[in-house]
Length: 471
Ligand code: NAD
Image 1 (tube, protein in one colour):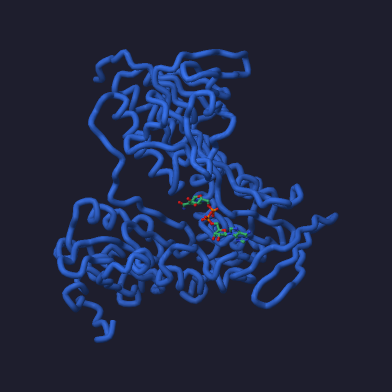
Image 2 (cartoon, protein in one colour):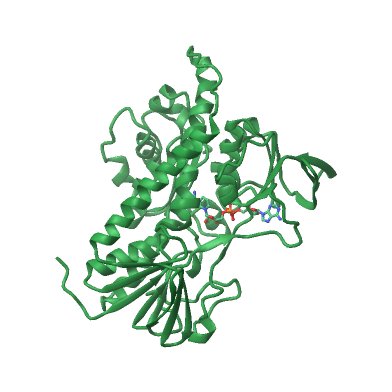
């Protein structure tokens, strides 16, 4: 049982930073009020992001597998999509989660208010609710207001131009979909629509999909997406957009020159922006940086001594699990504990098929820093489990400190890479060396063996794979 304290905490935003912070604070005995614009908890991640997209990606994978299983001697036929039932199921997943959060919140005696909170002074917050306005003194406040999709300047407004929220509503299955931005969202949502039957084109400004992610990991995804998508156009920008009566005309400029194409819908997925406006931060003396992120110290304290910030609004990477972790650090700090936000690694997963997952140092970061590393790679073509799944395109790699073989980074591309990643993140946090992983018995036959065999390669050879001398 928690001991009651006299600390009162107001949490603004009930997403993956806000609600875990509120729950943790209540567990530590604080008196907690949680405010959100939405009547339900969970934020973008649960209602308009991670959860609905993963539900739909699960369906997408099944549809793709129906096609692929033919070569295994199993003919399922072409699945028929009942869009209304699919939408209802997706909403039911969200509802079960938001209902669960509501009961966990009530059981902890947290006051949940639907409304808009903003600072009126350094000492007072105003909350506008559907039932009127309420003012609260600032004892401690945690800002966890998240982020929103970035839009492209000068673009017209049209129902045919969607952000991730609109795309996840599945308004229809467009015959031709243009995805602008080949990052996390573009590739995940593009994969969903391609599986549902859309002809998907992706345009990406830089010279590769998922900029910043190791090319070794991206290559096999790009190969597979090349078969699923109609076009992947790199170093390409949208020069003009013109909504028409029953389509949208787009001018693309890229290495092949300028071309005009017509689509039924366009998804804009060019990044996200922090929600730091309309909070009255200037009235409370809370500083933001040039990109709009609230400045925080290592305990997530803002320039106001009793105001804290966590999650997307407090800086990159904009990932739910990072938000939850730092929000709990902030609450611990508010409780007076000696803590700091200094994780050795923040894992990242792109939930495409195959998934790409990485943690710790990447090869490109090592190259940029001219840091010598020893990289060992185990191809899934040598994994019995991958063969039974007919998914041998995967790869598992460790990035090691050359002398000590200490694990600095891990990268995986392949089915369920996101679930396999946890072992790598733990190895980094625990300061493990390759031998620690190589000499841990991994169950057979599982994909986790690829982590063990890749680690064996640190000493030159693995049971099922002999790298060429030049590798
Ligand atoms: P992103 O930063 O991952 O990708 C945006 C892409 O758009 C980049 O590749 C960029 O080069 C490109 N781009 C930018 N301007 C462009 C233009 N004018 N034309 C063409 N391409 C352009 O951003 P996102 O995909 O919108 O996702 C936003 C954030 O949400 C991510 O950074 C991530 O933190 C988070 N997210 C995470 C997950 C996950 O964890 N699986 C899933 C979705 C989103």
